[in-house]
Amino acid sequence: MPANDTYKILVNGFEFFFAKTDLDALDLVAISSTEFNGINNHQSVNARLVDANMLTKTFTIEISGEQFEVVIKDALDQQLEQMGFGSAAGKQVKEIKAPMPGLVLDINVTNGQTVKEGDRILILEAMKMENSILIHADATIKRVAVVAGQAVEKGQVLVELE
Image (cartoon, rainbow, N blue to C red; front, side):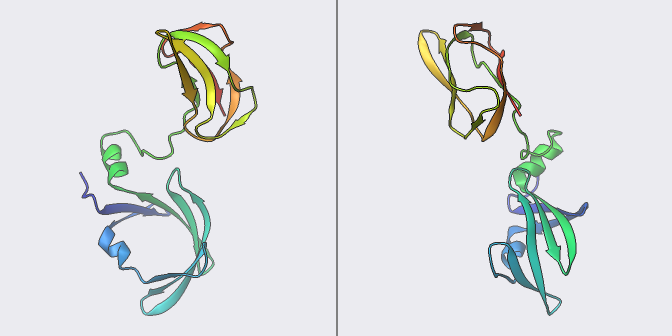
């Protein structure tokens, strides 16, 4: 397993490993939220963040007019990769399934609706208790697969997401 303070950084497909202390020692100055100035081989270098996907830890950085695709993998990402599970980041849920058998009491979303993390999708009655099924990330509802009053089994698809 990689050390907890070691990062695997892929730049245009080439692998580099850096200790957290190495990264902390970089001589970088933030000019704005997307522009940075650093020193490389005793020369000033300007860098600009073109795109950032925090979910997949993927960044596009422009340095001297050339763009670089950068992927950052922390110790957990590296361990999961070694175990054959790929990266922990970037796994997006496409379906919300019933966590237990029950009865759909109320549906709070419609097809095509945009929902925010924490929004209630529906209420599922199970074992004489009402359970709110919440969304865990911002998404758009592709299809509501159940109706109010419908009995569902554990693992049955309740809602599909885009």
